[in-house]
Length: 146
Image (cartoon, rainbow, N blue to C red):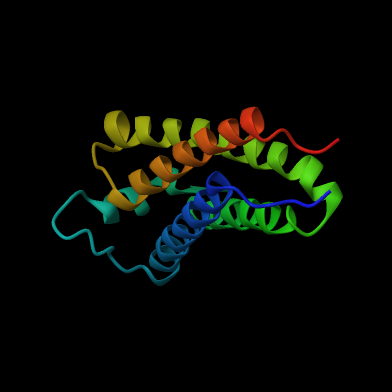
């Protein structure tokens, strides 16, 4: 059976690339100890240098970049292999669901513990939320092949 990518598939690919670029940018800032260009909105430096910006010495932004790479790999594998067509949509759903939950936790920390917001972090949280919505739409409207 032939597989034709839908608009929601392509929107997912585009959003994932945006999220990946955002996470790579924040990772570079973390590794180079530079301040983010927030254009006067938010306090990226405070958020990116807080103790919550890493887990066991691994920057959260790097973990985010790896998550976006995994999502992108699943999306790009989907049209190329029948097994990926069956399971990749569920993998994308699982990764974005976990990402949204963790982003909600990080946003809570920004608001109530760090008392500073990073627009790039909020962009990533928003991208993950839209990716989750698209993953749900795709699972409901375009059920994976059995």
